[in-house]
Picture 1 (cartoon, one colour):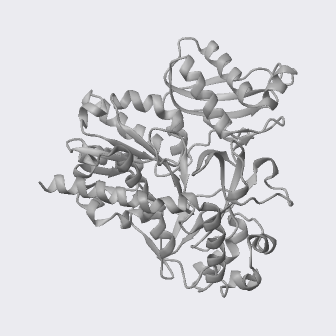
Picture 2 (cartoon, one colour; picture 1 turned 120 degrees about the vertical axis):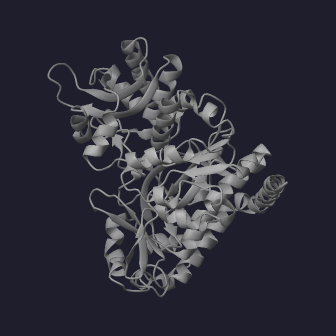
Picture 3 (cartoon, one colour; picture 1 turned 180 degrees about the vertical axis):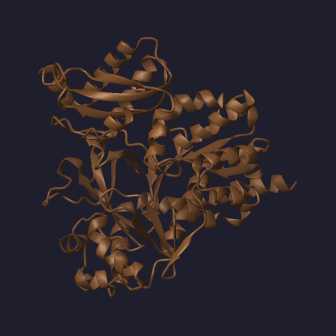
Length: 497
């Protein structure tokens, strides 16, 4: 009886939530401009607000004139002041958390996360589940066990600011109504070594009635493989009531076929777009592509055409000015005190009513050694199309340019770890090259003009990417292997694994 009440209450909450969401979906452009003015007004007396004359800002145009686009390096002097205990720097008071992320040029990054910002992180995740329940008209999963593959919830403190990985911070904000059904235990979640942690999670969950599982795709695969190897069964045989997988962090598509093989049955997939800087979007219709952009969650968005990104005179477009099927670098200003901040993600709008996006790449992850500027969406889509024609299963892949081969023309080299190989690897490579040419006209011109020879595949042994990740301290948690690069630093390193 209690389970019946619980799932029907969830359906009523979901229905009411969808009704209340209609306004922001319709009024995104107007709401976004109002939101920016509210953010600016709130931060007017902070150090950043005084330096950038927030008191004189009356419009989006004013804001863009006074606040340049910046990455973490641009905000780092302000963040260092916060780390040392200063108040009213980027946002009134001090942030509630620092979400600590790994960086390259900056070393570890400390992303401020205020109480307001954290509230919207939680609301974004809740909204994703409510939209799923409403669309499915089914909330059976709320009565089963739920697992969140995440970082350690143990937080450090820095001058009164709790500090840790975002996924560990989120563990402190799981709603009370989900706490009873949540796995793994606190003790298991605090294990730092990722492989040991996943083994412990397998032990804790293998005999439970799992109905919802959440995590980034590569680590879901690892968890599922350990379960299937141990039991000799598919995931749906082990967890017959598993209803929904919530995932994010990287594109799910390259993992779909492998995941389906491990699952062995129908499970609904809901993709999300969260980051330490904010919860940006989620798949509001699990049966169709596209992530609903959350335009009323304390984040003002600007979009720079990818071809202009990095130029001093690059246009910064409002949401009302975007075009469909075009790639944009996403820039945010938030209620956690990030201002005109380039998060490094590239998005492509596929709908304006409501605003839905695909994450098409990273501003720093591309291959353009010969002027082709291939991005993440193109390599993932090319691989997806190729797998549809040549059945195989991919664990991971990485693309790098080979500029100075020992013989012949330069080429793109794809480092691929197969869990199940195609029948004919040469035909697989030919199709993959064809699909990249279809998606990127510059690459097509380079091949047609004999500037490049067709791509080559370097087949990696099973486990190569995991072994590489371990060797550089990037194994587990939210760490991800970049799909492509403009140099061979990762490519040359992975060849030895």
